[in-house]
Length: 273
Image (cartoon, rainbow, N blue to C red; front, side, top):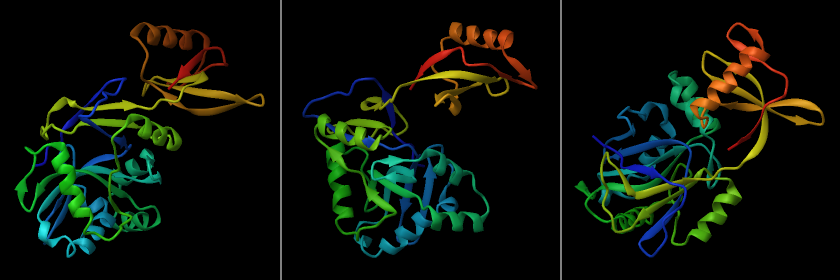
């Protein structure tokens, strides 16, 4: 069973000749098990996703003859619904993952299809490649995709050698972040290492609190637009325990309660990422 290599978060990216860089997409980590007769999709937790994403299976089937000499292969990547070449919309892929009705899955896969962004190969011609270096595995991936017709549903990830180049792409497309990979390191299945590093691209802006839901512990956040209060989402993470206690106590004392929700007039401002 496929066990994905895990990524370590840190604020700063490592730099130097031993590192390559790729855009981090906001989607479902996915392994594609691809043989001459079957295509199966797996989540990072071992859940089969094949039925939920028929457009990926169909794309693989159409390409199988072109890469038959390389099969079986096992690919590692991200299932996404793309907004731009480098930005994915997580709520849409999340919605797809929850679907169970075959007719609804088929309709949605035609209207707003998912894409598999491939960034690693763990099996090539039926042989394990996890002991190879990242650089060598990237070359194997290139050799496979060079044999394929351009396909909108299965794409190889773009790799950069310099941080300034990929930083421009990330900011332009407002991508989720960047992943740095040591090109000399092997694939450590199921392990979190400091040889794959991710950093996130945060956009910060000021908001104010307008409510709190005790059931799910989310705060409602809003902004002013020409004097009108406009809801812009919810926030739950990033508070210290002391900050959280202070805010919930304030909500209970100053807010208006309806069932398990409190609402409050604009009075508490935050900076949100």
